[in-house]
Length: 303
Image 1 (cartoon, rainbow, N blue to C red):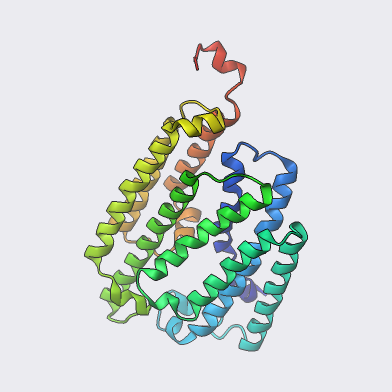
Image 2: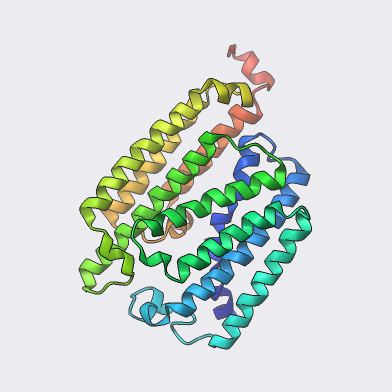
């Protein structure tokens, strides 16, 4: 059973938490109805994502067997039979589609989730071999998740939110490709066809560029008058400290430790990244959700 669970890559389901972002930034994350709806949407995206993972692993069996880490995947290692894996893939897709329809019979959410599925299906069937396009598709998947969460909660997504989501996803995707290039240089074999379109100089430049853009975009978001008028929250720019710290740590992992192959592994294992995320959420929570708490008035914090 553990091999079938591993085939679904449950560790990567953390990416689907991006569905909750619109509700969090709108200040409605503790609305029980929205949480239940988003949780069901989370299930839909997890089912769709796992079905895509199975298709991708099925098509890449031979390539994965030459990879030092991916050779341990259930299909590449021969721990799961191919017919059973394909049946499980179909079951996950149908189950995800059913849940998606039940939580939003108006089809809007299922349409967005379907775009995510078929875009990633196209990625698995060849688009992943086209350099630059491959990381753009991966990054678009995170934006689609945010849009899905906005539909389920009927929340307006600001342009800032979409831009920052895309930039952050692009930043992590570039770091992941850098690790692929390093693997190519150390082993002499190409694990991805798209790697031929990258080299360290190009990827290093892109990482530095997008890191700077993300920081500037986030600070501009926190001081934008439209953000204040929409959220009625003060001093959001304080949270920039944790964004900068998190990005610096990610760059350290990428350039110093050279272990940026899996963003989810970094999320699960790196204590520094975990601490910055927790502190960012906590600071945002205090500013956004507790802005009217009496303690602020007691300390004379003016608006």
